[in-house]
Amino acid sequence: MAGPAGMQGIMDEVLAGVEGREFSSLEEVQAALNQLTQKQNNSPLASFHGLSPTQMHRVLHFPFDSPELVRFAESLEPPVEAPALTLFALLVEAIGEKGLKPTVKGNLPQRFCREAALSFWGQEKYEHRTRFGAIRSEMDFFDLHCLRLVAELAGLVRKYKGKFVLTAKCRKKITSQGMEAVYPDLFTAYVQKFNWSYLDGFQDILFIQQAFLFTLFLLGKYGGEVRPQTFYEDIFLAAFPVLLDEIEPVSYQSCEKTLCRAYFYRTLSHFAAFFGLAEVQAISEKDYLTQYEVKKTPLLDRFISFAV
Image (cartoon, rainbow, N blue to C red; front, top):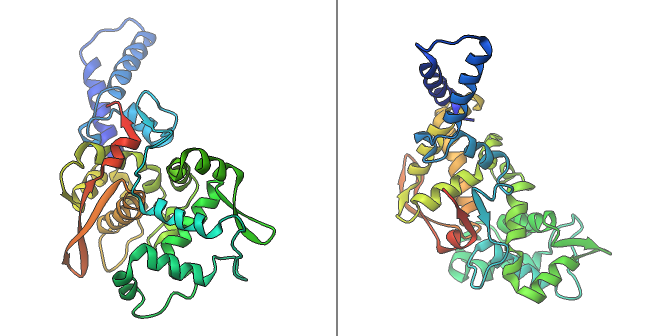
């Protein structure tokens, strides 16, 4: 998905490569075009920041099956500092050996949700977050709610005989390798099975989730320095301008702003920061919207290795 501008540039270079040449047959013309097209597909594009169209295709469609391009660590040595793993550890402790009885609606019990929120946020942040209303259900602690769904999708937690329990796979991994062993399972389930649009009120724009690995590639390449969120938003928009055609116009902001906001919150805040791969810090407010700065964490380079 190079976008109209990117594809047009590739075609222009291919056509320029055969212009003025003499061919004895249509087969010879086709062979020359195929050769030039292959060359262009394997050449890095500026809009892809070093990736070729062929590599981008692998990034988008085969993120876990392209070892020549990217590798994910199968195991991680402690410590692994990631909010997602911190919440999962709290859930594991609460479930224990006896299991955890869900509410009538099938959610985690209120008492655990409150205790988990206090432990996760700390006293000061807990009081701030609950100043307009206490945590009455799992849905009031949405990070925990999403983590529980992801843990089930990952095959780490399930309901059995009326209780939340840890699966045999989960217990085996934690017992033999520690809590860090389930991090890859949570990560994979989050990017492959969990619907990111469930987290917010933005339009679906499913491609944002499909392009998760491109953002991690960008963080690996540029995240050593603190950069404003707009740095990554602008790159994403320039790489995939055709996405603007999918945005339903609204009166209060441009299609570009809608796409950039959805991209930032889903990819950098709710995903990369939640899994401890990026630090996302609020720095200012502009036009009633909080502005953020972004930097990668050491965990990103420990977990993901790019060969580009």
